[in-house]
Length: 211
Image 1 (cartoon, helix red, strand yellow):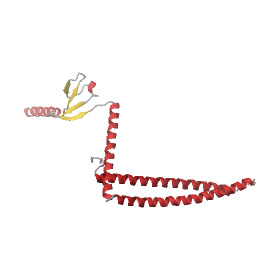
Image 2 (tube, one colour):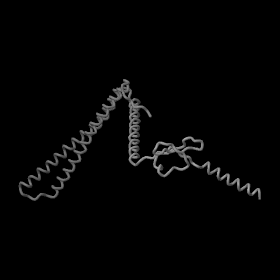
Image 3 (cartoon, rainbow, N blue to C red):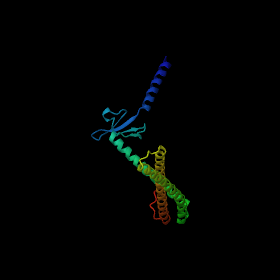
Image 4 (cartoon, rainbow, N blue to C red):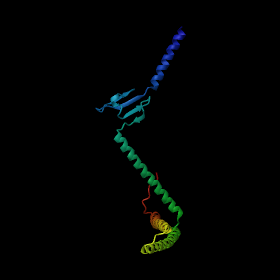
């Protein structure tokens, strides 16, 4: 019987010890600025900043309670910082690529000329095709004017030819505009890269700090 009682006492003590070990200690500050410690946080302070301590009294976790507006502002600020950091990393990557790709400014000009030559050939091709399509459309319209001047019925085929020619002219014009825009962007990009290359080589660039 004595052994059984001792065993029961041991089990109770063990459970109590485990409960004490698992108990969490919190620290919070009331509205008067007084610091409090306890295993539970009063409900009126549940939505305020609290600190969880370990069994040795050291800070284990700090719980920051924010209002919806504060959370939104903090998220916006974090997003801005992340975007700035990513932009800095991307800028550094471009600088490294620029320096590793070209040995001097002349090589940049040669690369620009190769890219420009390809697009210029496409621009010239579109101009030629567009001029031909416009002449064809003008011929159709002249034919249409003849039918109207003679009060003759306009053939369905002519109407279809005009619609087809107008669509072709519109598409070629759009392709030409896009190619000319691409050509301008290429020239501007290489000019910007050359200026940046010069700054990096001369040590006058405000290079972003790696993070």
